[in-house]
Image: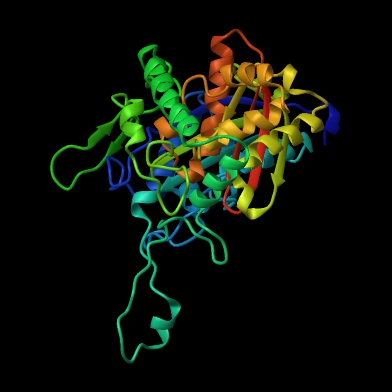
Length: 406
């Protein structure tokens, strides 16, 4: 085993599928096939055989699809043609799941337990089924049988809807409806500009996906389906808040989306031996959890936590990527990081989500962690290098953050 301090974990390949809308272009693709698309492509791009992969960590949150009831990581591995012996773990840490997977790859490589590991994530929110109470199994003599929609407001038992808590916490941090609408609009416009510049082209961050149809040829999907480049502040202002929230609307939040992502991580020694170009080096990873109602603040605190672990400050960072679970998250996160300095706040927001984020791109929750990682790494490369920190929150205030260098 190599000495831990001598080991470096590096990213050598990363890719995601286009993200589809709820009930959109990817709804007819089974979740295990969707995940396998990204896993196969991330290996093919660097000509790495599946036999070489030692560990797979697959993020997934809503596996209530009847055709794929459990262990989606194992199902994806087999569907992707990876070896039977491959060790795989399915992770449900809400929206943080696939970035947690990347942290587990990092740990395994740092500890010398493996040299090649895959972090991936998949979500088919369109294919998530309705829930019938368990009591139906034991007999319902009289009365109606009610099916529940898991997504309705995303309410955990004993807590308010995530959008309601987010709206309340955003107001406590001084980020109101207008500020959230403005950030949502910014995300759409930044994404549209990045798209024109080729930053979301097939062969870069994105891959094409072929979806079999009942009749005729497969449907080829080559672009994200969620973006709304025709939006404006007037349209956003007319939208009503959702699920009892004071500020959150369909315009300053992402949709329910389908998609998959994958990141191939190696020890530097193995990458050099294989002659692979290094996309980025992982400096540090850290999780963070807070009070359940304060999910919107978690990304900011998670970033503080990982900076402390790396013995760095936010001034050492060139780019910030905070997943837009709602537009409130990057607004609150940057405010926490600015620590009351308004000039610094403006500077931090200038380097945050520079090519848009989930409000425009979409948020297939299990896949979003790896997505923000590859988005940040690729933008650093375009800028000639530097350091980026990325973070996202998950249900009941889980958080994950990572620092990378290019």
